[in-house]
Image 1 (cartoon, rainbow, N blue to C red):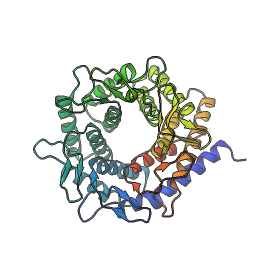
Image 2: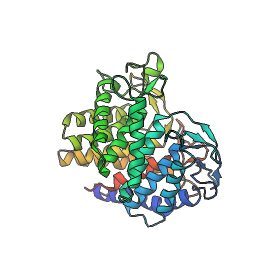
Image 3: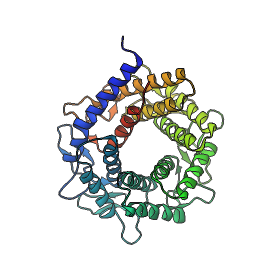
Image 4: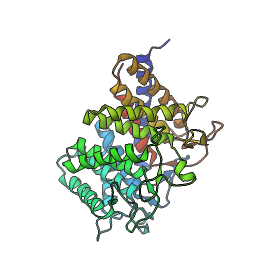
Length: 387
């Protein structure tokens, strides 16, 4: 019977082969729009692109993906793909008067949704950090990220802490964009950014612990009123297991940077909830939503929570204080990788399924470009493991 090391190596090799030989070439040669610029939002399962409205976050995520591919040793064309995304962010997607970004555009660059979107701007800052890691001589990338960051701090800071969704205010306030602002701040810390990134990361980490997490169960709430109280009614009761894993991955990175074990304990609790209550042992996939009493709300399973499960257990393995705990975390990372592989079985290799039904079958629909960011990050994380 294969041992843990053999199983890990086999998963690492099969996932990297799928990524390098099929996914990355496809999502550039078919997914990049060389006529109008930017990236197609989706690719049909027959391999043709969907020329529909384009969210700015997709261009940002593709910059992240191809910059990370370069750091992973991918030998294909990463620079043209990075440039494609950066040119979209600095061109059609940018409001030339404010310097901020439009959220959604038509393929020809016409603005569909132009109001501030915190989530999209967090991904733009992450994209600039990712590009800067492979182009450290290009200081314009850092200036672009800092300009967005400082504008958000000046115009969208919450009176207490954290950030608003709009100015004037709109409700609910949301945990999810803060998670990606946390991610972008950590990325800029790793890229050599200024001290403000660390200040923002610290503020968001503590906001999450003190306001986003349920004080009794340790579960992560998603939606809040203007004073950071959980929203009343059903929205205030929603838990997303994928976000539990994702926040855990970020907290473990933050604990490593700060040396504060309290964040490791927070991460462990988030992982335990997402695994025991939010992962279906029959399908062996993490599903979409729970209620705050840990009963299923939406037992369908999108692809992206599987990648966050991989990332959380990888980080847990790196942080493990004993060989036994490390090996247990690696075994769960392998298990989560097997869950991801179910989504990668498509007629055209390099595409993927996005939504699994409760019965284990998949919705027949185009593959979303935005998901490549999740997949490549998870594969990179699992690739860092060794027994």
